[in-house]
Structure formats: structure tokens, C-alpha cells
Amino acid sequence: MDSEAVENKPNLLADLKGVTLKANDIAKAAIFLVSDEAKHINGQNLFIDGGFGIVNPSFNMFQYPDSL
Image (cartoon, rainbow, N blue to C red):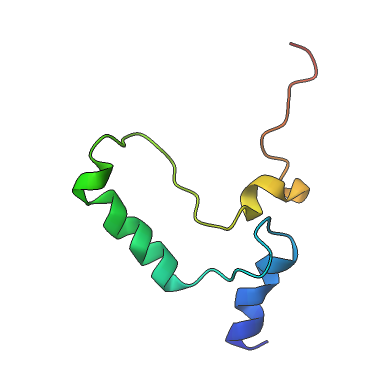
């Protein structure tokens, strides 16, 4: 499997169709987080995955408990 195929694999299940995550996207997020524009952001998890982690049901993340 070539590198382009590996990059495109998450696109099949991600929320943002037609957008491929590149290393530059992660670098831009890191630069933003160390900038003055992010001075009020703390204690957050920043998922840079095009929505893959949220919409992919196989991860079984973010499930409601059986009883509240």
C-alpha cells in the first residue's frame, strides 16, 4: 500500500469528505496553539482527524450509559 492510499483510508469513514489530513495540518494546529490567539485555550484535547474519531462507530466512543 502506498503512502497516498494510507492517507486516503480514513477518508472513507471521516465526516469531512474529500479532505485528506496532511502533516502540515497538524503543524498549523500546533502553531496556532502556541500563538497569542490561543492564549485562553487550556486543558483541551484537539482532535485533528477530520471528524474520523467522532463519526466512526467502531471506536465505540462517546456512548450514553445504559441508565442515567
